[in-house]
Length: 84
Image 1: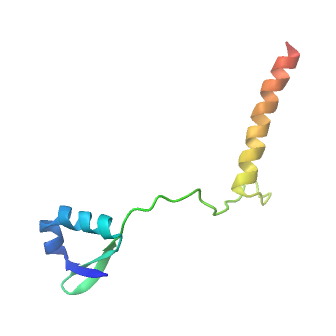
Image 2 (image 1 turned 90 degrees about the horizontal axis):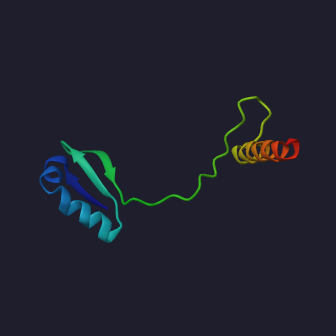
């Protein structure tokens, strides 16, 4: 991991961005000799697996809630078809 001052980074930002992208290593940015930030390569994340809970307090995960909502929408369409 390379350490670079904020002033040097500002003057050579495009070079450091290319370096981070090419070597896929993070870059520590310091100010007055203290680390203040890390510049790391972008990594496209896959679908978030963090569950979120239904606001009604039923304890459903986000995935289950989305499936239930989609199912409800499909049922509405089907019932309209049968009613006409």
